[in-house]
Structures are given as structure tokens and as C-alpha cells.
Length: 325
Image 1: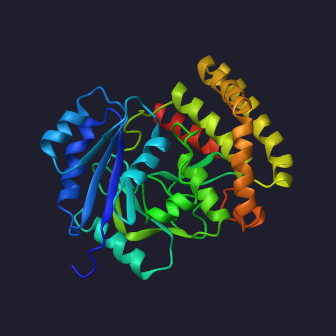
Image 2: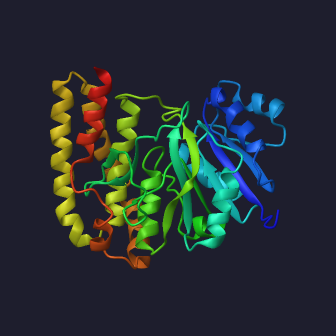
């Protein structure tokens, strides 16, 4: 192969043994051969580590002593990689043999800092219904994406970039245990003037919610409520915050009442816990905010152009109720 630059491919695993055979098998068959495979395991209890050691001995395994969450484990994967190019991929995925080669060729021949692939469903070729943007209060807009790079707010499921870029832009925030760490990082990338897109002839098959499961789950809401507010505080300018924070709180109050009416008090309480969490770490968040605001070169007005001006949570709940019938 003409370009044999080492690419470090890593995934974060927590009790995802059922996905790992197809995941690593599809990586072994890649046409691009100069790859390093890494699995960062968040203290799984389902024999994932022993399984990979025996079946895929070439995989470098980093076993954390406890579940550190996705954002921290992602940073560990990047730090432990040997390649100048890193490729993060969810473990509940698989891909055809030209997946890595197509990403790398596009990266070499186009002016983008971060790349991802088109999501398709795990068991067929249907396009995945996923998030690619957020509304002004930080809620992901849940619909079939257009993959217009000018409208993409963030990339998910996989991303390819230089190790240097990830580290210089501070990567995924360790205070985001799970969920929204990708939104926060790509928001920061946009503020720093970085460009990212989806390679339209490159496909990744994704199961979705491979570790946490689907539906209205307490932990899912808790993590999102903790992390959405962090991202808003860190990334918006001071003037914008004066308008967005009241809207965010009012929307939270409406959702608290809605879930109480639905008989789901634990989901309602997760919003209050999110507020408490953010008050506890506010000083730390403000320090990180100071770095972002000092280095940003893009205005909020330009960021708004990438957002969905509606209610993202409405789209999510609408989809949930349609699936529940």
C-alpha cells in the first residue's frame, strides 16, 4: 500500500462481549493493514477481557480498575496509542474491509480535521436515525441527518483525527462520565475553527445503545442532565448565557412536570441531580470555560447556524412514544 502511516484504532468496552467478535473480526479484514488495535476496558464483569486475549491476541488491552466512563477511557485510548492518527470506534459496530482505507484516503486528500462515516443499522443497510446537531438549549436533534458539513454540529460513533489535534484541543472532558462528551468536544472544535465531516462513501454499521440499552433510563437522563449544562456553560459566550440559561431551566421544569405526570419520578429527579452536580463542580467548569473563551475564534452567531431551531427533546420523546405503541 502506498501510504502505510500507522493508525491506532481503539474502542471503549464495558460488558460488551457480545459485540467484540464481529467488531475485531471486521478490523482484522481491513485492506489498510498498518493498524494498531486497542481496547480500553472499563472493568467489565462479562469476561470481555479474557475473551479478547484468547481470540484476538494482537489487540492491546488496557484494563481499568473501575468504570471510568466513556470520556476518560477515550482519553486513555488516545494517550496509549502509538499512531499519529487515531480512530475511535464504538464497540457495537462493524464495517466492510475498505472502511479504514476510505477514511484515510479522504483525510489525506481533503482539508478536514476530523472525519466520521455514514451510520447504517447493525443488521441491515438502512440509514441510522441519529443525532448530528443540537438545539440552542443543548438537546440533540434526533432525526435522519443530511450530513451537510456546514450543518453538522458533531460527529458520533466513530471519529478519525490526528493524535496531536485531540490532545491540543483538550479532547473529551473527564467530567463527562458518559453521553454528550462528543457534543462538547465538537462544539469546542467549531469554536477553534476546526473542520469536520462525514465521508459519504464510507459506512459503519451500528447497533446503538450497546452498553446502556434503549428507552427512558434513569442513568441516561442523569448523565445527559449533568453534561448538557456543563457544555452550555463552557462553550457559550457570556451574553448568550444570559438568554440560554433561563430557557434551559424553564425547559427542565417543563420536563420534570411531564415525567411526573408519566409516573416516572426518578427521571424527574435526575434533572434536579443534574443541577446539584453542576453547582458542585462549577469552579472547575468555569476554569475550563476560561480556556475555551480565551482560545475561541468563532462567534456564537456562526455556531447558531449549525443548530436546530426547535425543541430537540420533543423529537426524542416523539420517537420514544412511537416505539412504545
